[in-house]
Image (cartoon, rainbow, N blue to C red; front, side, top):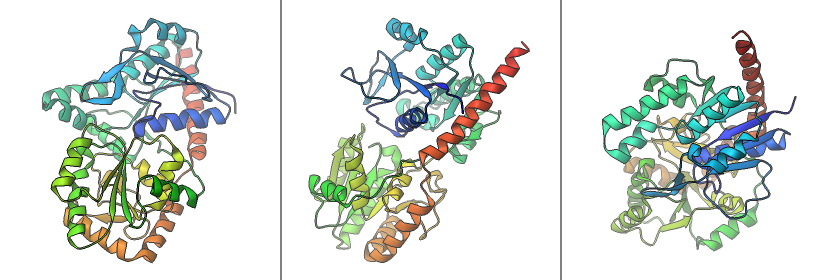
Length: 391
């Protein structure tokens, strides 16, 4: 397998703040470990020392996104220093995980170098733009832009069957290849669980865990309402929210209103994988009721640590879950979620068995995923050369 020079473009990167950023980081890290030369382009987030990566990071000037300060945005073409650095880099293929600023930068790089452009579709953009603007017309215009960008790419991937279906619903009529994400397979370390429990004051009680953006769009109100019902039943537990987001304060206030002030624990954004692994290990069950996500990366991460998840029946993220075998399913209803949580907490042996099945059936190592990615890259590059040789 020949060494490839791969350019990855993302709207967010280290410090990793969401699923897309983490996927791009896994691509960069794993491809580099396989002997490929990787360059990541993204908005500048951290201006401090950033050495030690096995890949090259070339970022452009950025500023915080209004009302979502954990995100950064900028226009790469306006950063002359970024342009000079990119002009010195040779690539065999360009792969963007965003159609917006990063996508525009990726398309310019692909055209300049005369190499193919791949785009991976991840997100429910209509929902995002509608929430931000409360305008159906603006959200539809944004989706139309995404479709136009997608049509200009040499190949389109999606992270799941649900994501592939969604981009077609948006109006894209070309072929879409489903390229699912992997997960880091790591050994279970009981000391990590003890460390995490001690750090966040979780000793002595079972806890429910959510990891992800603290954003109402993730259906977090359902978790709070189900937890309030669980408390009324007399169940002793903690409710741990790991992550950051612009709805954190509202979530905390709603938890207080529901009488969950003593149960709720915010960990903040976690950059230490050992701490996150410890939380996954120590949790009785991972709660992920999102109807927004097109794939459930965090569900697979929890499974690596032997922790089963509960998801909404019929949701995109629940696609690989068989109820009471490798996870749990419930209705989009607080009483039903409370029922599942109550039953799971009172049957620890069954819970452990479901977690074991999850650990075997759900995780796929990034190394295996990247071997397929490289094969597809090579095919795309060969087809691009053949098609452009006749022009």
